[in-house]
Image 1 (tube, rainbow, N blue to C red):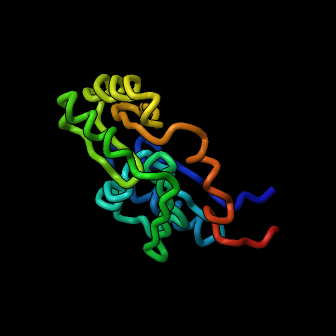
Image 2 (cartoon, one colour; image 1 turned 120 degrees about the horizontal axis):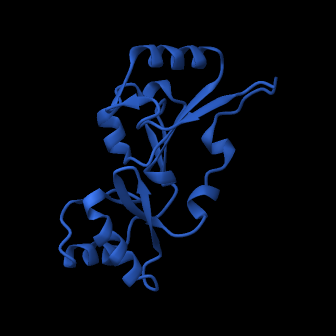
Length: 165
């Protein structure tokens, strides 16, 4: 069996303390040169990945924001796979006194201290706001509820066409 792709997370998988070691970059480049694809999958916001990861060009695709954004580094194109967080959700967070959170194209994110406030707003507004809490390490976020985020990403969008070996 021949594998055609490697999908990997950034934080604490490729990167330690936010940085990828040079031997890791070399291994990823060799993988690409073998005709395989490398896909970066992260809960981080795309703009954050662009700032912290200097070599997005190594990846065939980047899946960011917990599946909410698909990015093609070779073309500089991003495709939204989920809707933006509702304005009333963001306002509810502000009314609760939350200040340390970011609102991206498809996700609301905060660090661990903000989890309680985020969860409270999600639970209080379950009927009117279809978002669910997400927790990854020291980070927390809220994204569209349901399976839509995952199912919208079809293989043909994730990877370019390839010849079966």
